[in-house]
Image (cartoon, rainbow, N blue to C red; front, side):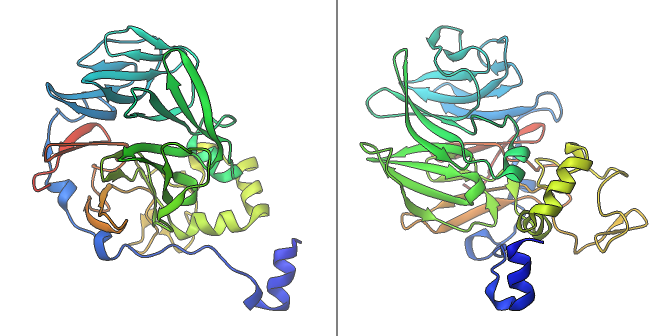
Length: 333
């Protein structure tokens, strides 16, 4: 029996549980992603990240940069520097879209890239211990890093981060998405090692990549997962006895397998998922205003195939996002 359990038994008011805030104000649900224009034939590619250049849309899919070439490893992130597309490739490092080597010091774990005003690159490393986001979530991993890449040199400028999944430069500040802390923070460009000031906290989603004021939200929080994270013994039993594919954690794209957990609970009865069951995946991208509040968002309905927004690119009034199996352009951005 844990100390938290004893405290709750003695006085329930002593225990503080995780809560998930509602999708309210600027995050109020809508159908903008469902109404967005498709840029690809569904299922032809599996886009992960996207950038906009003067020449158009460039995106990654598996080991390929569409508009560039194929690489021997997965393309983990994209960025544009002085009009040139750069890619972080697993097992290779940072390269141009045409294959020219830029830096070999950062070869794995990259979740996002951004160009700094001085020509250097900023890369977020989700974790130095866990390769999968879900495992980092359930283990409480805090080994993420922010790396500055200048020429062939890579310097760790911040570490101990909770799966940093997005980075963007705004004026003299750098914005970071800290996925496992559900927040976005800003750090001075000249003092990236200092703890940042919160831009927005306690989001109902796990924030991801950043493009200007737009933020991708690949995963949605739900109360069942939060309950598991509050119960170490239950969490340990789940990870020890259940396949990772069946853990009750957020997904980029949730199917409806018959082996899914909680078959006979209040979430699913006789194979039918109840309307009040917590969402396992979502389709969401949102924009922050100058004060750090959510100004607008684009959602997909709960049963939409347009879930798993892993990338966003905003330029000259265009907003393009990557979702499960497609690229979408918002019509009214």
